Length: 493
Ligand SMILES: *Cc1c(COP(=O)(O)O)cnc(C)c1O
Image 1 (tube, rainbow, N blue to C red):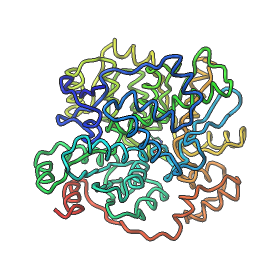
Image 2: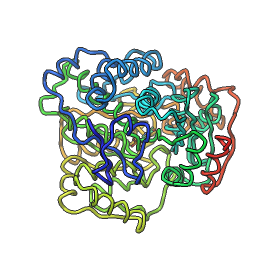
Image 3: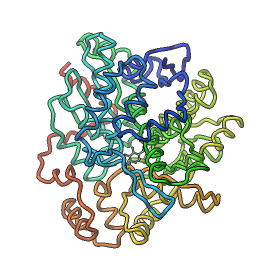
Image 4: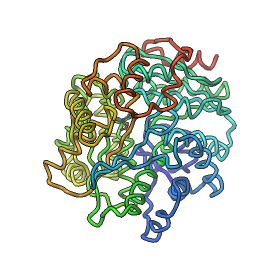
């Protein structure tokens, strides 16, 4: 399987190259030249497999320059013992026809772990294939969860240095503590003055800055990415949608007319993985793209206009406070098959802050996607009603998805079973969850955690409980113009 760049389809590289480099030199994102199809026989086999075996099976269809043994070692390393329970992506039932796929049983309690526990294995294996002997430097822009998951995945991984930039005022207290107390010899963490888009744009800029690349090379370093612009982040996410389908079939859920999937969306990575699962043969009818008040994707799906010239809101679902959804570029390439068109759109986005797609693409988009959004008030109401009606406690991001999934069912009358991606533990956003339940909210984060636990009896994930009393190692806050110098100082170059 070859990978091509969304901005120049004549560039063809191996999966190892795509994973070690993260992004194509001219700024495009790598995607596979075609999407492998799974046969009925494949699904029969997948149904009787463990999660680790399913992951290996799916990865083998994309990472064809890895040996079977390498892939098996990677998935075993990533998914053995790092998640509580033997299924890293278990399903919870809400009534007969709705399933929540809980993606937060890993070391940092958000869905990013599913990819970022695996990525270091993929990257170190791939870099052996590339054999250029350089150390890999991974600058990460995070809206809160990627940063911690990347730190946890890459800490003390040989020949890597990881440097995380988060919006200093844009993450939850638990997220900030998780990052600022991170252990490891090769980890660096900076808050930046600005929002996630500032962090992401700053990091993307140094990736393609020739002077930075040369200075790194002179010191034996090269860049890669752990953000979802890296194909190695996306491929592990396809697995859990296929796995959820197999688990539902095994449970006896009637999927004869297909099912729908709702994903709380920011950078469009998780929902793009669901799109790949659908294209591989999972009988998904609609992909419901759920946004918070930063509803740029809802508007795009409904009007064909992507316009980031709008107010940016800080919400109680901060991991989705994003106006530039990087992975949409991959979707635009898949729908148009035209690299020049993608270049034009990205150029317009950069220069005008907006672009509009043609009727054909718009039609294809709305065939596959439904876009909806939910503000903070509705998010809180949804947490509360879900808890009352089903005794199910969810975080703010998952609640956005639940609200939009409900809206989708009402608006369309579509009664197919629904799978909702639950992307974080409620204990990552404890204060908002407590508020939703109508409780008084203590100032102290750990008191709040204890209170939510006492109120609901839902157990506190061990990694969150362990944060209490950890020493803060990283408190530095920099301007967004200082990202380059922060990279140099982290590497002592
Ligand atoms: C990252 C994140 C999202 C958004 O996922 P994308 O792949 O960026 O669309 C949603 N919820 C949580 C909790 C996250 O950490």
